[in-house]
Length: 466
Ligand SMILES: Cc1ncc(COP(=O)(O)O)c(C=O)c1O
Ligand SMILES: N[C@@H](CCOP(=O)(O)O)C(=O)O
Image 1 (cartoon, rainbow, N blue to C red):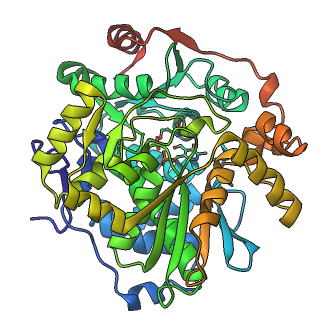
Image 2 (image 1 turned 180 degrees about the vertical axis):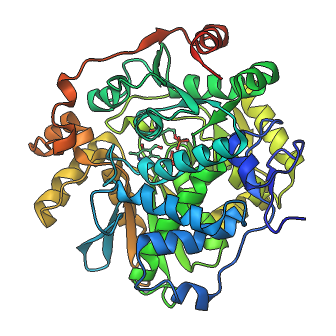
C-alpha cells in the first residue's frame, strides 16, 4: 500500500494515489479527496524550516503529500518555476500592522489574489502528469471572481488542457471579469452564467457527476474541491508561523472565508503538527459558516451581493472535508448531511461533531459597514491599504485576538482588484500594477449561458478538444 493515498469523504469511490487524485478533482461518489492519514512533521522538522526560502519550505511540506509520485527533482523544478511568477522575493511576505498583529500578503502573484499560490503549481503538476500519460484534459471551474482569473492565467496556452470557467454574470468586479475575459489563448473559455456562484459551482459538480460526460471530456477540476489546491495552500501557514517563532510559539490565523478551502488548509497544517492557537473563520454578510458554528445548523438563506464578491457563497464546498473529520471520518454521516443540503438546503450537525468543530475554529462576521470602516481605520492608523476581503478578516481578527499568540490575517486579494469599494471606503483609488495597467482597455471575449446543465455541457462538448 502507498504511504499516502487519498480517500473520498463519501466513502464510495476508489482510493487514489496523488497523481490520480490530482486529475480527478471531485471523487466519483461526489465526495472530496483527503489523505487517508495526515502526514506529521515533528517540532524538529518544523524548526528546520526556519530561515529557508518559500520554495524550500513548499518542497519540504508538499513532498509528504506527493509521496514520490513525481520525482523530487521534477517536483522541485515545478515549485521554483511556479513561485518565480510572484513579484515579491518572499513570495508571501508578512507585514506587521500592530504590536501583535500581522497581515500575510498572498496577492503578489500574476492575478493579485491568493489563488495564484496554488494555481501556478497545480497547472505545472497537471501538465506533467498529462504529458507523462500522453493524455489531454478538459478543465471546468466555477468562480466567484478570483479562482477563474488565476486558473486562466495559469493554464492559458497549455497544450494538454482546455479550460472552461463559469462565473456569475454581472456579479464579479470589473477587474476580475476582465482578468477572465481578455485572454486570447485558444484553450481558454470564459462563460458568464446567468446565476450566482453557487449555481456555477453546482453546474461544475453536476458535470463531474455525469459519468458519461466526465469520461468523454476527461474532466478535471481546479477549484478547491481538488485536493492539490488545498495542499499548496498549506505551505504559507508554515512559512508565516516559522517566521514568527513557530513551532516554539503558537500562532493564530484569521481567514476571509467562502468556499472554506483556505482555512481548511490551515486546519491541515495543524493536523500536520504546526502549533496553531486560534483558527478564525471571517465571513461577510453571507455568514452561513458563522451561523453554523453558533447554532449547529447549516442553513442556506440566499446570497447577498457584497463588496467582497469572492466570498458571496452559500454552499461552502470544503466544509464537507471538515464534516468528514469531525464525524471521525464517518462517510455515511457526510452522505446524509449532503443529501439534506441537496433536498432542503440545510442539515444539522450532531452534538459531538459540533463540539469537535468548535474546538478547532472560531467564527465571526463583518457587515458591509464594518468592512468599509475597517478599510478606512486601518489606512488612517497604519498607512496600510487593504481590500474588502482582507478587511473582513482584519475586523474579525480584532474580535478574536489574544495576547498569548500573534494574530495573522490572510490578505487574500490586492486592493486594486476592488477599486470602487476601496475608493468609497477611504477615498483612495488603488492602481493596478504595470503588467495589468491596460487591462480595462483590452478586448473582452466571453459567452453568456443559462444556468442549465444541458446548455453548459453542450457548449463545452462543442468547444473542448479532449
Ligand atoms: C479574495 C478572496 N478572499 C477570500 C476567499 C475565500 O476563500 P475560500 O473560498 O478558500 O474560503 C476568496 C475565494 O475563494 C477570495 O477570492
Ligand atoms: N472565491 C472563489 C470561489 C471558488 O473557490 P475555490 O477556492 O473553491 O476555487 C473564487 O474567487 O472563485
